[in-house]
Length: 341
Image (cartoon, rainbow, N blue to C red; front, side, top):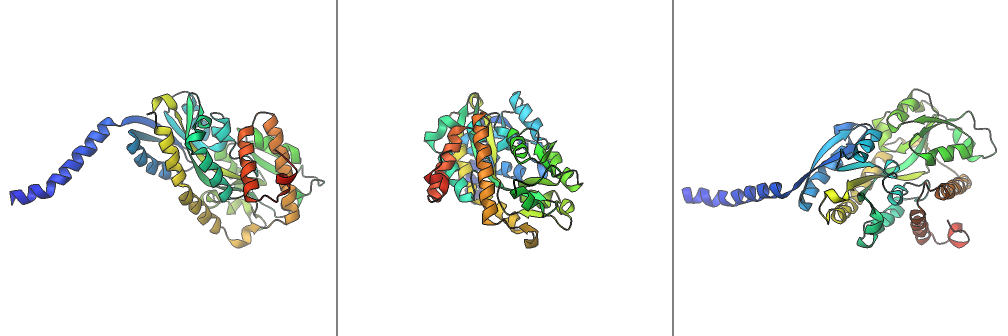
């Protein structure tokens, strides 16, 4: 009997010893995770999977949840976090190239986004992912951003550049000059807010327009703010991403490249998750936009992107890459024939 027991448990014992040895070899690093819902949120859940994957790259990540993105970014900047996961908007301060990925109306679909992230994840693009002492080690889709409005008539006002829109109150993230520039260009009234407060202000009627991916529609109970006549404009204003940053010299040499490949492999799963939330929004809540108005939106957003590029808020290399992708997927578009960005 003893021989049989030894035979059964010897492989298990070897596995346990192997795992213990691996744990000893792995470097312990902190990963500060921004999620509006904290440790119970979807982004934190993604980072749990990421933690498991990182063990294969000899790093044992200790996750720390944050419900304030500004606080997470500040703690990372001060060196209290070895790594951090943030939205593309907040990550712009650490890497302008990757942080310009969320540029307004620059990537119309998830197919466009996948082509850009695939390019960013290649070994040849590694220098662009590094802005010492920081390195971008992963880009994962959060979902296309849509405008949430409490009155459907705002759609026509928004498209009509001649109308008086000074009474429309638009939530603007105080950390994003791109939003401030856009709202100023269309003449609406901006209401400065943080991402954590934006949806509360929409629900209590302090603002008429907010924005975000479909996942926040249910999580933040935006039905309250929309009331009877509100809805979601079916026009993606940006592709929002989760970006993982590290202090490059605190991690193994190949960590960044391996991590970016892992994040790229999560793309389809992340997009499926985003689409599921889009499909869960009731059909009557979606507000369709005419082709004529879509053209107006494109022109308005393109003008704003160029202004922000000239001000150094958007990276010209990223804007050029995204334009190439747009033209590859739609070579007959006017910007691909006559206009350069």
